[in-house]
Image (cartoon, rainbow, N blue to C red; front, top):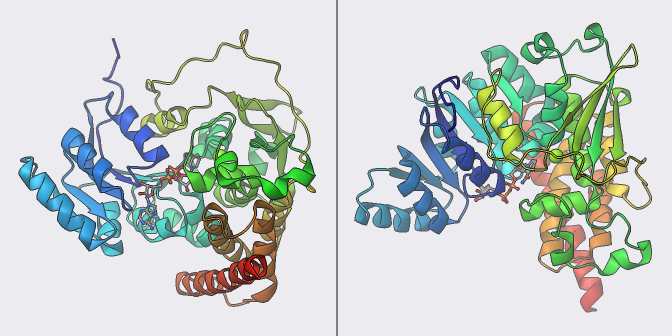
Length: 407
Ligand code: NAD
Ligand code: MG
């Protein structure tokens, strides 16, 4: 029987509850009666949101478009549910910052998740951050908002959660100053995705279905393509610098195809601490929900005797130019990560939609980066403006490539 008493009672808003991380979060929540759901949110999957509302009985459900909200309202009323349905961006910020909420799971995909994630950190919540694009886009401003309000940001990305777990409690509670704690560098591991060994000449012809078939993890489509290009590790490189206040020279990337060692922290005395576990997002989700305690996650336990050999190798930047772009953007700082992220979102959507080839994704991103220079001090308004500008330029670059194919 599950021992539930040591987990603190929490009222939780799950942003992006119909996605891969969102559904894993609800699975963990369902194991503990003292974890209650204040709000759920979805982009357009009204059907699954309806089922989740009946099961978790949130006070509020938020969906992006009014037409979906109307339908959901009618269905819930018919089913005798008293969940209120709202729509739009302000409603998302409201469920992220409501005084009735203790904990927010930020699991919307893309920069669309930034406003509610920012609302959650600005109002001092315990924020479980899966939405790496929010951090990549707004970086230092996001963490400053958390420092100012006293919000606790707990990383859900498995690599960052692993690093967090390998830090002393004092560093977990107070961000930064890792060098004073004896940390020399952190090592992000990467599976290498589905195309680690595909001949380079074949990459041009890979399909969205092949790119989304990750060897170890089951994830949403956008992050699956990011894993195939390794832009995911580029975004995570930036995420690590921001979350742990590290310079790019203190972050390394190693390919580890088995996805069992989720990342490592190297200390000045030569000790390396690593976190290992099954590749199941319920592990970092349960870690963050219970932190600083521990709880059951539902994930299977690791059997290292049955696990294949653990391998590690340096990434090949010719195969994975997107990783090089991510590392470069981290070094440049300023608005570069925001431009990189916005262009990547457009390029990945265009690849999934059949408009450009897999190997054209990085060209769209580097072309966009080359066309925008912004030396203004960082501000949320400017981030949103630059993000919009990057999306326009990236879309033009996509259109030019599609025209070439149909000409
Ligand atoms: P997903 O596509 O499966 O789910 C995304 C969720 O966001 C869905 O609920 C969707 O309805 C909602 N959504 C999409 N667009 C929206 C919009 N414009 N406005 C409001 N809601 C919107 O994605 P996922 O794989 O669960 O990933 C979510 C986030 O977590 C991403 O930032 C990803 O990088 C990060 N992450 C995911 C994993 C994983 O294993 N899936 C691991 C690490 C980090
Ligand atoms: Mg990750």
